[in-house]
Length: 247
Ligand code: ZN
Ligand code: FE
Image (cartoon, rainbow, N blue to C red; front, side, top):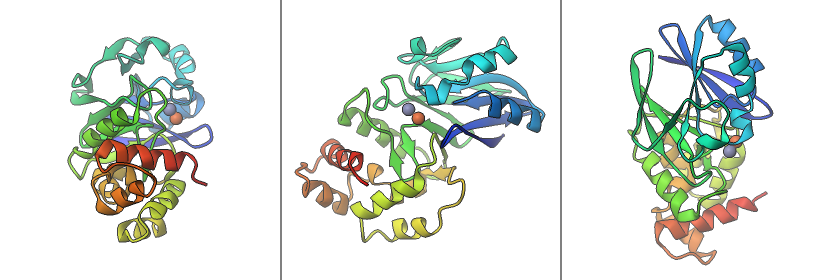
């Protein structure tokens, strides 16, 4: 299995996941770059995997369905009604398949109520739930829900590659350094951000992403200085609120 990164719109990432000449596309924010990548890779597009219902992740669906009628379209069951052409609504733990390789869906509500991560072959496609050095805004859930979702992602095997939905890593790490000025892993990552910065790994995110570090004393202290209690959900909520206003 291999993955081709497909930049879309201003800073979105779609991904072609390729196995044996067959491809699925994750989060096609627009159709044209995806169709160009399918042609360039010489693969047959069989499926769309939508992490959540926002237009910058599914806006390419009408164009893809017009060019490839009969596409399988997978989405989380709570978001499926808001996405065109869904053929299968997925619940937490449901399996899916690409050319004989099986993956598993992780329901991670918070950014949207139906947000899911596609986990397959040592990779996690996290959409706007987990970013490089950050996380999505909590639009439909609450901080406790988003925190629980991120904790489940953090528990994936450390070597899992994280393919996220936006190129926000540099700004996210500037914020991470504000939360943890003494975190040497954050300082190192800031100096070594690749272009593009996707994929990351769960191990790197656990070391540098403040939103996966609500249990770390320095993060608890930073949240406490902003009035938060020491429990994970409160720490996460305070750090998330701080990031919302961080320039
Ligand atoms: Zn989104
Ligand atoms: Fe997005």
